[in-house]
Image (cartoon, rainbow, N blue to C red; front, side):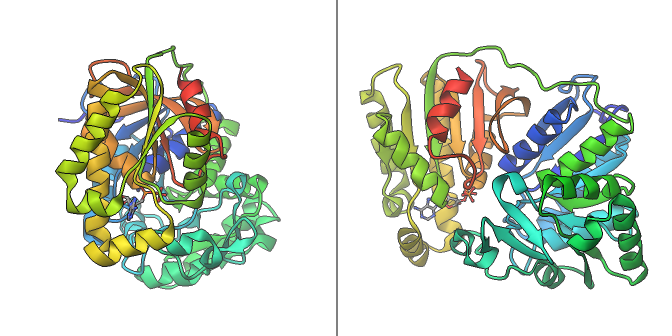
Length: 431
Ligand code: ADP
């Protein structure tokens, strides 16, 4: 039976994927909250007593909406039993979802569970160039629908208007809190939210162009029991709690050195990751690029090929194994096998690789891709992550709690995150 969350919990979060959870946990730790990321609801005794924020990581972004709602609701019930003053439903900064969900259905369900009226919803993450202007999500200087996210293997994003996107997934109408209101401060946002609640809106998309806007939104959101957003909104809520003396006793953990062999596994097909793979290979990291057609059609044979390749590499040198491919190859694979079947087969194979790597002595593991990270973490049986120093915006170094018999340094990178030399940097921070 899972333990109750500590009575001191200030902030709880339900995250719809593992890398997103890590991104948020990183932001909360940077605000001074002692933060743990758990993989699902933790078992009794796993959490330290002085933890102030718990991010429950689910793998619910791309599963049927009813399942996502049920899992999120369970996580919420556990957090709420721990007395959390506020619960954040953590979503991706690029609002990854389809018309079937899952952002709308989960927001509707948690709003009902918390007794909140109209939650603030804001995925913005200005540090990674995701901003919301008049309800429209920008990735850098492009609308979401003109960004590479339109080619995402699981959640292709074709509509940049978040009010419209969320309304298609929700039980009712969605309102907007424009940046002109946000600029006026937290009281103005709180008033605008109350007006939208009076009008019966089920959610309020809020603009944010800067971290300052997210601090203002966080202040307003912290006055309510529930919100939906990215790690930027989470940081804003945490900052408000620290300012008001409701949290902030903890510091992010300094991680002890682990050493040992390093490996990188990539299942992300994002533009950023494809470049990071090229850079790592050019920098001399032994790289195995897998044939995605073969992975799906001949999974066991591919795994044996990978094992043989790993055995041929120098013992201590880092290695990189990638299923990642550009959009035209992804389209061919999906056309032949179906999107979900292809995705699951590739994730499953990379997860098997992770287990094999750890068995063969890898102690520092970097994983690229949100879904991929979920599959790897599950295969390794990891129960929670202690959050360490930041490697790139949104990506901390972590140590695994539970699961592996030997210490394991882990970096879980959402596809779009990190600069071109991310992989080498991640391995060296884990050292
Ligand atoms: P990101 O964080 O970039 O979204 P994810 O791991 O969440 O990365 O999603 C990428 C999905 O694409 C996974 O389901 C993965 O298995 C799948 N995938 C990886 N490589 C290929 C490929 N070559 N063809 C088709 N799908 C792929």
